[in-house]
Every structure is written in structure tokens, then in C-alpha cells.
Image (cartoon, rainbow, N blue to C red; front, side, top):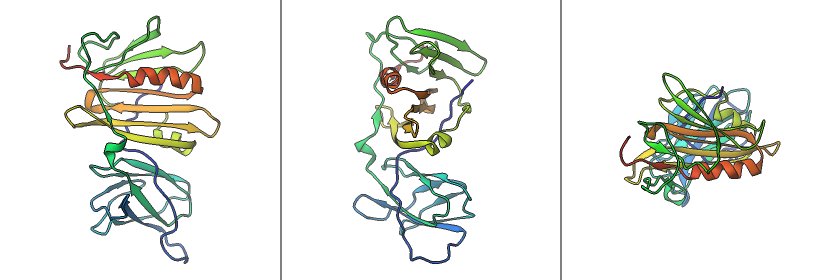
Amino acid sequence: MYRIFWSLLAGAVILYPLFAEQEAPNRLQGVVSAENGAPIAGAKIFAWRDATSDAQGKFELENLPSQDSVIYFQKEGFRPKASVLKAGASSLVAMLEDDAKSAWVMPRCKRTDAGTSPVGQQLKFLLPKNSQVRKVKDIDYQEYLVAFAKDAPQLQLWWGPMVTSGKAVNDLILESASFEFRSVYRDSGETVGYDQRGKTVDGKMWRSADFPGLSGAAIYEGVSIEAANAYNQIIDSACQLSKVR
């Protein structure tokens, strides 16, 4: 059974040589900048080790892994980003976009909204009529499994404390031909999570929309484009309840 992986962060970064060719040291040197080229100080970097960019936007990470790995960047006001760092790379420049361009502002549910969510939860998804839904309940979480077609991978809707996934988003990114990320906010401006999606090299779609600030999440992986479109309609219908029932 898959479980939710709340990853912080998201997006794609631009990679290219930053320093002159030389015998590669066992460390990564990089710069974090804005779209206008200005350095970004205080950006958080998450990878095999964590770091923070300095006043010039520079950072270093030692003990490079021998295989491809995922590196994330986060700074308030900027779109969270991630990229695959190829084995052997020793430098990079990460350009962060204005977060307002892509952020998802979670709306409040209307009284007329149809759909369902477990009692006591803050997050609601609108399920199409005649949806094939199987409900699973445990001590720590509740899960709705939504079927698109017989024997096809299901959409997993989760409510409850954060738990780990059967397959980490890192692994999905490493298998992806393309991927993107965005922040999720309450209408009050508070960050409640991150929405991550991609397409693997074999043409399958995946999405992990994690809302820890609303105690919920949605995830699917290994599905066709047709199934992804159907599941995305459900995920994109997410709204926050004004009052927990």
C-alpha cells in the first residue's frame, strides 16, 4: 500500500557549468539567483546534505554522491524548485521564479459544493457522480481509493497525520522526462503544501499533491494521460472547509 510522501519543494532548475574546467573536487559549488540575475541570499538547499546560500547567493555541498541525485531549493517568495544533479557534476546555477506566477491558492468550499471528505478533516475533494470509491480507515489516517478503470492504478486521497510513501517523490523525479512543482497556499496566504507532477520516460504520468497544512494529500503514479486528466479534475477541485466538521 502506498502512503503519502510530503516532500517540501519543487520545480526545475537550470544547470550549466559555473567554474573553469579542472580536476573535479568532491564538492558541489553553486549559485542561487532570481530571474533578473540578482543573487538570492538565505535560500535553503536540500539534498544529500543541507545548505543555505550566502549574501552572494553561493553555496557548497561536500561528499558528492556517485549516482544521479535530486537537489531542492526553497526561499519564501520564490517558486520552490528541484532538479536532477547528474553524477560527476560539480557546479550549477539555480534560477528561482517569482512564486506568485504559479502558486495554487486553495479556495474555501462553498455550501453548494457536492462531494465528500472524512468527518473532522479540513480538506475536501469533489468526487464525480458514480465514482468508484473504496474507503480505508486506520488509527492514524483515512484513505479513499478512486478507480479510473478496472486494474488501473488508483487515485489515492489521504487524510490524517503525515506518513511515508511506498515510493518517494525523489524516485519519481529520477525516472521522469519532465516534472514541475508549485506552492499551495490558503486564501489567507499561509503555505499549506506543495503540488508536484511529472511524466516518466516511459510516458506514464504521476502527481503528488501534499497538503500537510490541511492534513491531507492526493497521489497517483504510473497512469495513462487519460487517467491523469480524470484524476487531475478531482485533485484540482480541492477546497478547504471553513470549519472542521
